[in-house]
Each structure stands twice: as structure tokens, then as C-alpha cells.
Length: 120
Image (tube, rainbow, N blue to C red; front, side, top):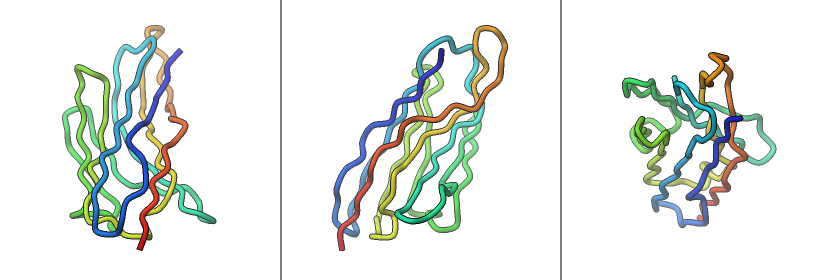
């Protein structure tokens, strides 16, 4: 059993910052790529950022230069530092990770999401 739990969402004014965290727990052998997605009101879930196990990041064009993804392999966590937030960043942010469990089964797990609201 593997779980991803996000934290750090909230309400912030435009131009402000928030830091999201996601912790993986359970019968984990290896965590491969970790990602953040978001679902804005009335829209489909969209990719935000990804980080490989070795720390190489990739970003959606809409957040490039404003968001920073990082991870701590020892703690099984991934973070998303969000700066210069815009009302268009308002969404439920979900953590996603490709994880090999103790039975060597590879699966893509999702967290339940954390709400980020940016007021204008």
C-alpha cells in the first residue's frame, strides 16, 4: 500500500508565494519521476512540473520561471515552490509519482490534492 499526501495549499494574494509538499509512504522500494498536476475550475487536469530521481526538472510553459520543483529522496518527498502567483494559478494541485513497491510492481500513484486559491 502506497499513499501520497499533499500539504501547503491555501489562500494567497496575487504576486504572493506558496510552498506545496507531498510525502509518499508505504511499501516503497523506489520512487522514480515525481510530478505536480493541477485542475483549474472547469478545466481538465494539466501538467505543472516533473522531477526525475536524479533531480532534473521540467516545467509547463505557464509556470516556467515562477515555480520550482524539488525532491528529497531520503524523505520520499517532493515540493513545489510557487512564486509570483496569479489568479490563473487557482486550482487543486495533485502530486503524482511513479513508484516501485516491495513486490517490484511499478504503478503511478496520485495524491488527493490540495487547494490553492489566488485572489486578485
